[in-house]
Image 1: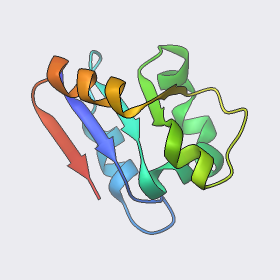
Image 2: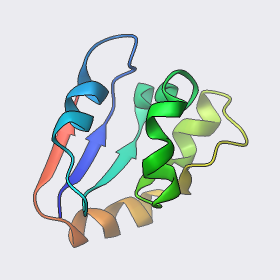
Image 3: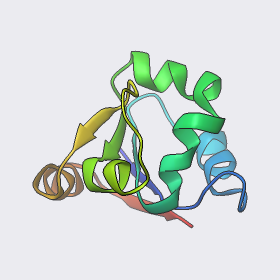
Length: 94
């Protein structure tokens, strides 16, 4: 089970698209930093991950960027660390 961490906005580069090309059925994705913007611009693409509860978004980054009411599971830093400990390997996309 790989943990994919996407920190780049889809408009700034291919991080999310590259991640989605290699993601497997038991992998999870965390959006943080500017990766949060994918919730607005790539919602249709992310719906399967949202429905399967495999997409997470860091609550502080959602708040900093003014996002409210998005379906991704919001997590705090403690849960981020837990997910990091539960998954191997960890792949960062930025």
